[in-house]
Image 1 (cartoon, each protein chain N blue to C red):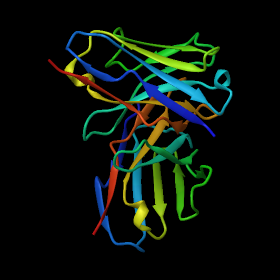
Image 2: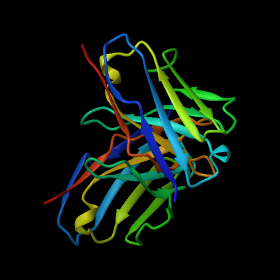
Image 3: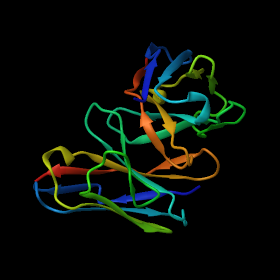
Image 4: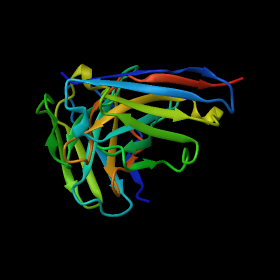
Length: 119
Length: 108
């Protein structure tokens, strides 16, 4: 059974930093691209970032480019998101998600971790 | 950038009725479109991929159609557990994703 478990969310002040982790199990983690998707309270889904199988290629939404960094450790089956210079508009539930084998859709999602940026 | 526009924003229907949800892309996405269901307090769940293929474990009452710029998600007969928000999604270059704004299917 595929499981994705996010951790690291919490309350942070504007301008602060926070690191999220996603622990994966139930599938060969090193064989699949991974992404982070967020959802602000009462809003829709927003793609944040993706990382390739090896971690060598990373992609970011314009809204987080230069502030967030995605990475992965295939030896630990873990995905990461380092978030710097946080803003109030970054407040959201952050979901870790696995890409399907064809890399055209996200076939499994974690339950999410809430990040609140507020003073 | 490709924009996905979903309509209607809200669909008010009764259990047993047919639901038809639309997703329109600002330019062709071939058949590379997916649909997700999200219930309150839960993560999204993949329903349909590549426009018309049901994901594992998805009931046959869910079907997807379309190609190019116009896509449809149909729920043939609404069950109580189907009242939720539905999102379409496309993959543009490489691993970049775009989601539509969502359609809420609510009980009439």
